[in-house]
Amino acid sequence: MSATVAAAFANDPAWAFILGEEYGRLAAHFAATLFDLRVGSQNVWVSDDLAAVAMWDPPDMSAGPAQRIESIWASYRTVAGEEATRRLGIYNEAILAASPGGNYWYLGVLATRPERQRRGLATAVLTPVLGEADTAGIACCLETSTRENRRFYERRGFTQATTIALPGGPPTWWLRRAPTTLLQGTGRDAPKI
Image (cartoon, rainbow, N blue to C red; front, top):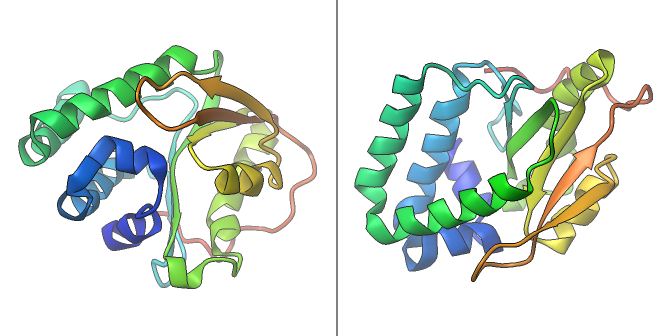
């Protein structure tokens, strides 16, 4: 999954901002860190061939015990170094400052290997949590730094956008999807991890 995420985000402006010139060295490790943070909540969804992955944080935003979370981030910081850690801090502070209030599912990562894009895999791994959120009447949120991704999410109901002020970084938006009673697809093709 780390290779899928690293390949999918190779041209992403936010990841370029966070990882800088060390993208090649850090991307897979950063992706593995994001996976390790979320796998314990059992809200990671993948396509059968691991060509697509969606990593969610549940509405209560608990990612597990604080000690475990700090250990995962400490491991990343050791590999990433001071400069990449500083840029990640700037990014996270900007995201937190603009984050929507209330309870919501947070889509931390949606990635599809570039050669497998536009085949419905991303929608398949999104659908299970979107359906669960709709059933519970809970919104879903995410942030993105590309207009193409923004259009992709808008077609899936993420129509409420808020601009994020990211000092020295790319244009970035919080997107929110209100719960709906109409959801296409079943998501049965996306195993949960």
